[in-house]
Image 1 (cartoon, rainbow, N blue to C red):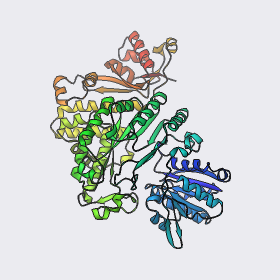
Image 2 (image 1 turned 90 degrees about the vertical axis):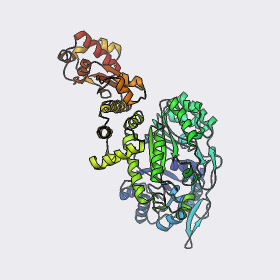
Image 3 (image 1 turned 180 degrees about the vertical axis):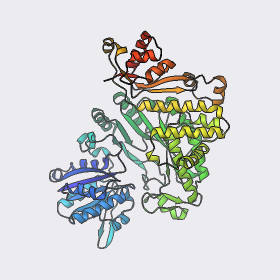
Length: 622
């Protein structure tokens, strides 16, 4: 019997990994009979794929059974594919699982062609339903499933696996071929200790079940040996058990310092040691702030102490750990003004980025059950987003959406964390007011461009052009060159950080060349930048008041090369002649010709070129 498990991911990304389906495949192998009589294939697609092409690709496997993992981003796409498969092969067995199946089994079975659904954690019911199908019977009565019977829909309670280590590891068994993917989802726990009413993780019971540190240790070995570049840790309460979290971070620091890890953490469990451990590895943290209004959060059973939150985040800033915040607008009792205050609170804490979402009233959550009584008007189908509420009318929701887009472009994509608060202070504006101004300017001047289509260069240009208008409007034109220096430096720094440096020549290779006669190029990873102020005065000042800096320093001008080397980004101050020399390296003209053109002595040019080549600022032409 051939089984195909289908994952329809939201978009190509390092997170597009069929981990849930791999768990099912690995668990099925624990039954010796099924392991020898069933084959399980994992198939990956994307929500934007043509349903007909997806159905035909699945059909080429000649499956007897097809299962879909359903999420809010792929439910409609999966339903269309399932319907096409039913038309192509009427005898095929179709089933679905995942959050959407668990949250809305009646609606799904009433509107889709699935023969049955798996509810909750899928390993045990998947094995048992496949065993029934192998015996020639349509699955009925298996715990943790939903199905039609005599015109009615029958639900059986989901079942959780209490000892997670009894589940075979997709990584250790090879059920998931991680070499096929650009990233990895790494599940360390299931469940949640908290009861936030809007969250699907909370289903009326609390408690976290964790995989053992010993298993995590073995899986980390596989991650390292497989050269996985990015790992997204699936554990929404990773640092609640601080002792275990610190042990895992020490393992990562010792064996996987080159792998980038993404963690979700709770602010109230951050301490100084944990902050330093996060800073000691390559990672980014996501913290669920959601709202800065304690009363709003209390209304959805989420605690919040603004002073404690700020103090814990200060530990991350002190250590140098990279972090961002999740924000939700539209929670019961929230308002547009409250959302703006949340933005002001959040941005004052220097997050690297913000991920901002409208409230989604997810089926199966406590909030969904009281949505009507609370006056929450929302989409009935995915993505279930709020349309309006008594305190957040539709017009304000639309304005909040524009503000969220402005924050994403100007702050997060614009990598503004290092200079944003200095700019708002110079303009005398709260953060949310500056972003609102940017949003209005964006519509008026650029016609509300499609955010997804904007390149990093285009975002940088939008920042520069908006700030010209903002400083002129505030009568602070004298501070504009300083503001643009900050924006430009951090744009080029971020670009260099992401660039791939050239392979550096050996000292022997350089010693064997008459470098002035060998055409050279500026390395693609190096950036030559001109500034209004002396760049090292800006860097040595740290965070500063723009007005005070402009009073102490004059715009004397400077040039620099910004480039990556050895995993770090360096800034090398250049004379005007050195800047012109590097700018003229074109891969055809000899350096001695360029040196004489810009009036650098041969010996000085040879020494500088050798330095530029050894640093990766320049490269020998092929």
